[in-house]
Length: 169
Image 1 (tube, helix red, strand yellow):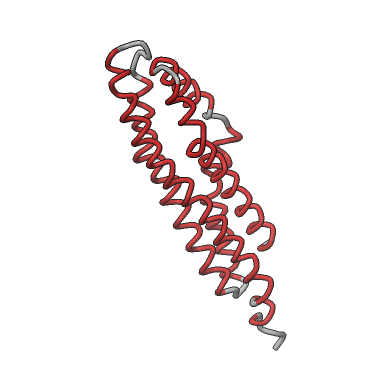
Image 2 (cartoon, one colour; image 1 turned 45 degrees about the vertical axis):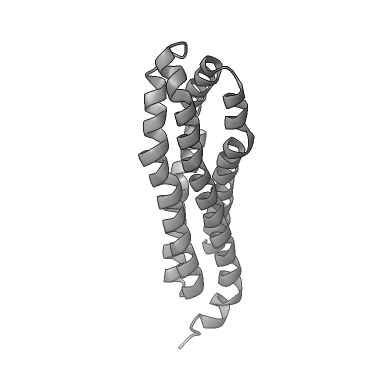
């Protein structure tokens, strides 16, 4: 159960990090190279299309899965894996989920309220891209770091847990 929870949470954190990486690496640049109204309209549509059970399940489900994996590691006496998974949980929960809710979602809400063809939208677009992208970089790095920490926990659980598990009394 420990191995399965670590592998699943590692893959999900990496998958979410990959989505954020795509936006940081080329999606936002492509949108920003379009006329403002076109970029705004496309981003407004993306912000609606992303709200799916599949994406939200992966995005929001990763943190509790990392927490569960940490709890399982602790219960199994795998202190190194527990520490790594606990840290992975904090990095992902704060750097990905909390950052999204505090910084990206409010900007998305403000953008959604604007008419893409309005002067107000065109004036807001450069600041939106710059600020949204900054926080997206944070989410990307946090998600990838959480995946790496969980992967190290997998290695720790296979190597060190077997050596520290108490034998029969």
